[in-house]
Image (cartoon, rainbow, N blue to C red; front, side):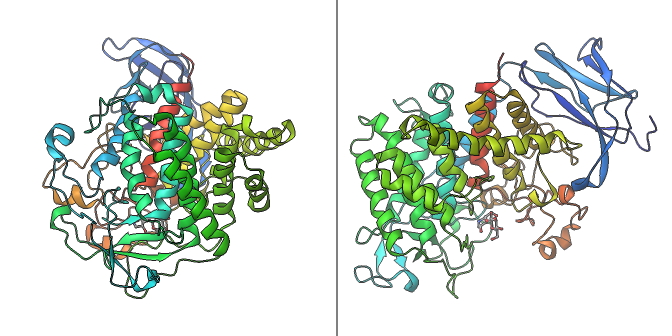
Length: 555
Ligand code: 9MR
């Protein structure tokens, strides 16, 4: 082994479950031997050979794999070529439970319109901001019953991201992912206590937290026609101030097809979920079902109402031009809820083969809903078709991972704005495939994606604030920037490397990005909204995947 610089050893900084596939990655070596030492007495628990180094295009560098094999619970340290990894890693039965809790708690920290109390938020306690009880109808949203300048009340919900606005489209995939986590892993979530005001009531914390945003989303529908406003927003972004110091006027802006169909899909799914908690949420499931069907009818009448950002509005656009995927998703959720075959026909008209989901591409969520509730499907042929579609995607992702030097499915083009979530949404689809087929390579590939997010990457950073040995300290997140506390709000996922670097100018004074390569285009600075912001649609798959791997990995 010819080392040009000391081997850089990258490992999941939260460690592993005893039954996890356990890989470490090493740069600056080519093959050679590795040893896993017991932390403490330094005795050798395992030894093995690194794989020959292979090129990985996203980082433009070569890397070798150490397959750590079976390890009993304990703490270990990896040694390669006489060089020890900077920190130990743990193997234990609860490796990812606290991570899933923290990622869910991240939503609580982003609650709008409420104070966070010290007993729930600790040092991150803060005053309420953005009451949103008098929100102006923007001219783009005017209707006969709600003329421009009149006001509605749409309080609560979560701030979208580092900014303080609330966007229906991005809440769509977010709510789906959280509710799917409940549907897929109820035993995991039933017992969790994440320390929110509702903890200890008869409802799982996951569903209490989800309700905080669902209640807001319900208020974004115009009851007169069923259409849904695209977003609730300032005209311009607030600065990096605490919520109570942000006083700009708030508006709801233009109804659109994407927002309305995302609303329909989420409300149909939520109606199903909250029907199981009728005593705690009386009448809510029925109200959600009606709201979902009303939204669906609006979308039938307005099938291409593209969101066009008004000239006076400069906040997040979440603009989308193509709605077949939203139609397919909403149709699937409404079919599962109602059993009405017309919705299944609509799904068939609009659906394309599933792909890794994102806020703008939600077709896979519809396939997932049908797979999850395949007993509702009319016949075995339909069931087989749904299973095969998801399996094909999982198989493709698993083979991409197998063929990559870093053993992950991420291709250069996957390093988008929010690449950490792209990695986790790949994992989410691998988990869906595993749930259907029991194919262990899918679960191992999902583990590998989580490993990437938690530090097994060329930057050697765990992208979740407060969780890992080296984590983001200067995320783009108004409260974290303004609260006077060094450590950012914990449990939040940094967007991750994004080679388009749309914030290059803003980040020049901070020294700029270290590299233009896809997997290295990240800067731990609050200048970087394009690589180091947080967002609800990124935290949601973290909740899901952490819980999934914790719940599914055989002991
Ligand atoms: O996640 C969004 C990404 O896909 C887009 O490319 C980007 C630019 O439009 O916007 C991202 O979403 C941001 C939103 O517009 C405003 N709130 C913060 C979001 C995360 O950066």
